[in-house]
Image (cartoon, rainbow, N blue to C red):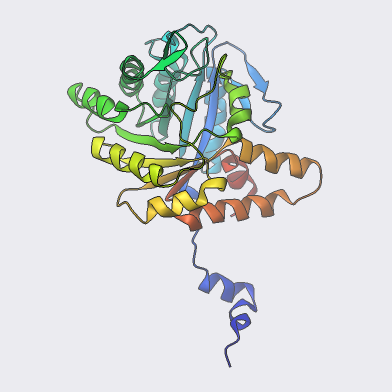
Length: 320
């Protein structure tokens, strides 16, 4: 008689037959670094996550490394913004100066940089705006300049998150021609126009001042389009592709994973993180159990690596 419960009777047998293996080294911790000399600000909608100045970033990264975190992704917040997001590609921008400081002090740290303009533009969009329209090709020029400046400053990997057409090929060509062939590209390939980004936009001050991002981020109703975007980015030179968000798009993660031969990243985004934190603070769910289940589900769907704001808690609290 077949009794599946025989393989669930104890912790050891459950470990032996588990189908999804969780490796903490495949988790990436996001950090927000802001211009300012003594800045450390809590983000109200993201309990436990802060905007920090460069000096405090160095302190936090040292704690990350001591806890075992080896990979991070950086998001920059400038003091001043303008229509073309000049702070994104300034040689003395917050990301560029932070990269140089990090690489001097922690050469072993693997640093990914988010490459976009939305944190730096006064209008909050991810590209150049003219007459109320977000222009693709002029945006790609500035995004490429941003990626190149990050790589020159020490980024191990650049991650364009704008969703403009042709930006991966433009970045790859610029890096190669500058002798930066070893700098890899993680493309936000299937990035959906999602309500789950709300807390991030508060953290980065990147709420669009008009309209929305539906003309360049993907429609949540579409699945085949995700494969189209992924295949284009791979053809253009992406080394890793990403699906974002994760939880409402586990089917997309699975579908992409079954269709490609390069690594796949999933972004466990700010809104997903904040829901867990708020449920935990209200005492209506066990945070550790929720986080374990969520991270497991994303790996089970096919992600090879995960960007998650839970990474710090996972490492420091031994949740896996």
